Length: 221
Image (tube, rainbow, N blue to C red; front, side, top):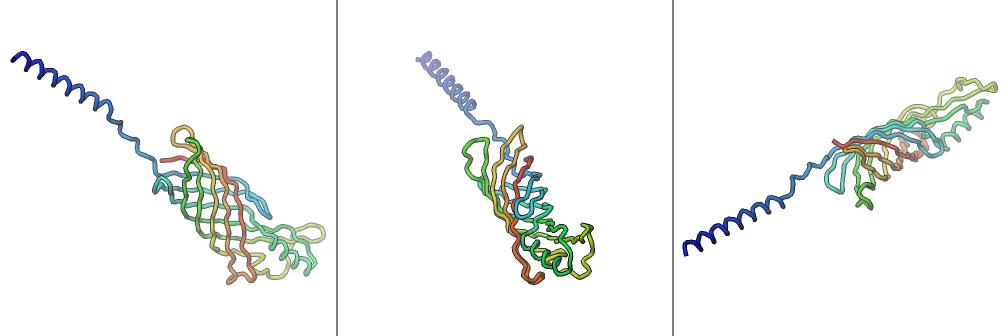
């Protein structure tokens, strides 16, 4: 009987040790802490009546798996409109000159929400964005004489043809990110920006519709 008790006890101890060993083997390794912040630099062409280029820098903060918040600052070289060309031509014809060049330069700062769409593939991450901000728009027009030299028109120009204004800007768009190496990623997308009219400063002002093709690279940290 004593021998049976010893054998049974040793068998029980062996089974407990085996279970403990198995449990340790099945315990998952601590998960790597997910990076919640990222910063990206982008550049590319702007589209519209006038085409030029832009540069921007964007900071993102991961709130949930589906939502990030972002802030962005950038510069667009020329988002001149058809209305600007028309108004410049009216003045040029009235004073016997020709329009040399027209342009609207924009420095902007905006913030908003980035919606992360369920990826169709593990290495492709689609997203959509919505934001609101401020655009500092500077309008510039030059006039030329018959020989093509740039000349002073000799009259004061209204706010529709010169000067700077701060305006509200709405942002919509989307794109995809593609991770590489470890914490780096490529960002390819499209942004539409509506720079709203400011009729309190500029008579008959119109909304400026901007479009950007985004080509960027970023890092998570």
